[in-house]
Image (cartoon, rainbow, N blue to C red; front, side, top):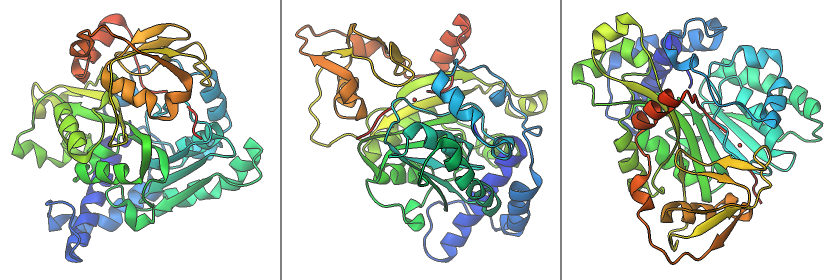
Length: 390
């Protein structure tokens, strides 16, 4: 997850200031309107872009919990990233879906560019990665090492770029409709005052069959108005944390397929924050949402993983409910059948008619708090993963 503690607070203020200025130009995307934040804008940019040098100020357990073992191809890609880039990386874990070769990927809130460079290695010379961030200093840092990383990877031409912009308005950054196979985000959406705008823009720039794969913080019940105005809670990512059921509602309104929970884990908070929020609970959760063809025919069938995805040749854990072993037929719910059949995963699965109607969908885990409990009991940490586009 990305940007907790002071960083999260400052970044959120930056988003709010941007929206206030947009409102002054008649382009409001949110109802937030506290003009007192305007005077902090330059200080925010200076701190986030110049003063912060490591993750020592991060306060929650977001960075402490263990994650799933990384496949070797991801480990090798990370080793090749320049130390200056890695040392200025403020994220926790990775948001890396499977099957990335030849894909076009957009990273919302790319920061120092570490994930983008790692992804540029994984997508290959024919793929392309765009990192979007609002901070000049971070953009300058990431752009500085483009040639270094391309030489390190043995690429003749750069397959990565970094553009300035805000995650609620990708059009202003000249990101066109249906141009990306995958959008990723690492704990940035919960810091936005207009989350629906972020997801709507992600939907717009995704190709049909594409997905947004993102990690965020979720809360078990709605915060009171007083607590939502607490800047410390915003700073820790708590003030803007989503209710997971709201994510499902927003996804449906925009047109995404129902979110697929990938993984989640409980977050702990220090006593100072606990004294403020009381008995609220928080999890870090990763979801994947797909943009599928509108004329999609759904069916409940048997699917068989035929292997071949880099790093997951024998086994792929697609989400919290389904793990596929090479060569083994699995009955899946109709939503997942539609996703596998109509996305970049289609070439790695075979599909068979299945005449027996079961109640498998009723048992799907959607609640990240429930899955966090299951994972905790099983000593399963978790976080993220990796695929191929044509």
